[in-house]
Length: 380
Picture 1 (tube, one colour):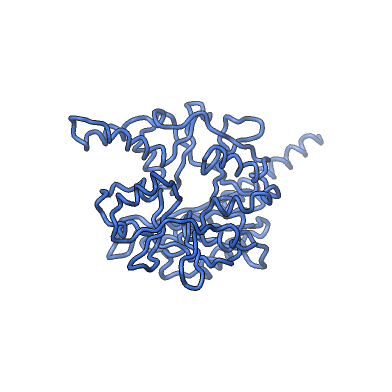
Picture 2 (tube, helix red, strand yellow):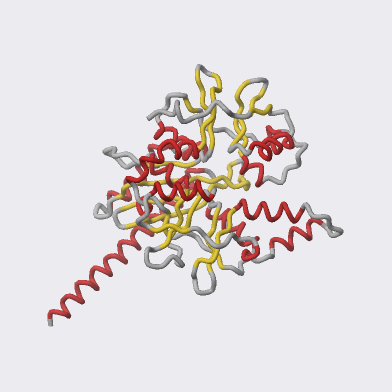
């Protein structure tokens, strides 16, 4: 299926020299996922609602300040390749080109709506992210923000002292809360107000109750629920207890599943591929393949490598976070690390991944031994 009937020609443009206040007005009045940015009439990049919400830049600043590159999509590109381009580009939206000119725009919702009827072939358990990072109700907003940055996530399930799910907090919840409170008239210092807000418990900001979905639910049902509730993700819970956080499933997880292949070599997907410097996709794939070849009884179905750039730099080289996640016949296993430049970050993450693979293999061997021992005892 190509995207010619999925993408839309109904999109918004703004010049790079315009002020951010103009972009904010478009988002507030029209609510698009993103706006195409042009410079002297030529395509320059995109600006997304999320970028604008999370920035503290004044409205008088030029749009060019927040303009980001996005994958360039051709009008007749295959939907699976477009899904891969969005995930690997770390983008929710991208321009669609025809004859070298911007023809329209496509975003993740358009793709998911276009393939929705085919998603009943998958169940949530096949695509979700297990072992989700959670946060207690009494954690501060400052702690929430740090965890989101550390793990490069935009949502965190909130749990009570017994570990049961009580809410969900997203970057949008935090930005909306801070914006509303900073807009209130005050005689105090803004810096003091900000510090006090960061000390508030997440319980004051989280959304509750939380929409959950079970592991055996179809991906089609999950996406329909996200559309109905206007959510970008859901908490996944065991079938027998919807109070326990089993993981999360997001629209990006569904897009990623659309790109899975049955190639004769390991399929590796890279998010924010533009951050690769002295390391190539081929080198990354071969390096992960080396690990999987060592443990052939653990069959790897898919590998996802995500790079995230921090503001810190060393002699011009940015600090990069890398996270590798393998989806195997024995569950999911991950490793993460940081370094200056993508290659160093990947090597640290790869070493962590291999240690975690060994730990997973050891735990499973222990369970197998325990099972054998119990069977022998029962035979006495």
